[in-house]
Image (cartoon, rainbow, N blue to C red; front, side):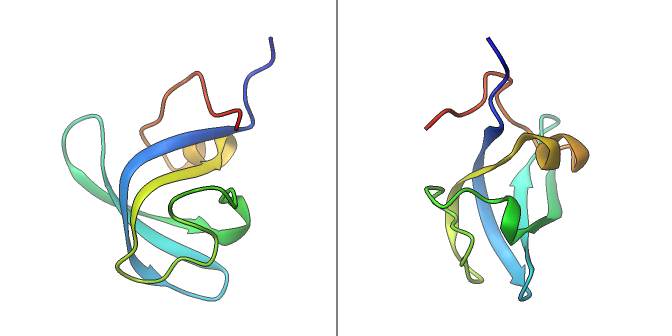
Length: 82
C-alpha cells in the first residue's frame, strides 16, 4: 500500500502569517517548542488549521508529507487518507 500524501501534525498554533505561508508553533518529539514556516499550498483544506489560517488559530494541521519531513515536524508515519 502506498504511503499517504498527507500527515497530521498535532496541537499547532499559528503565530505569524504572510500571504503565502503560516508560521506554526508545535511541540517536537523531544518535548521542545519549535516554530516552522509552512506554505499555505501544502495544507489540506480539511485541516483544523486551514490554508486560510490567521494568527492565534490552534488545532491539528494536515500537511503534505514531504513538507513535514523537510521541516522535521512530528507526525504519525501512517499518514492521513481523509
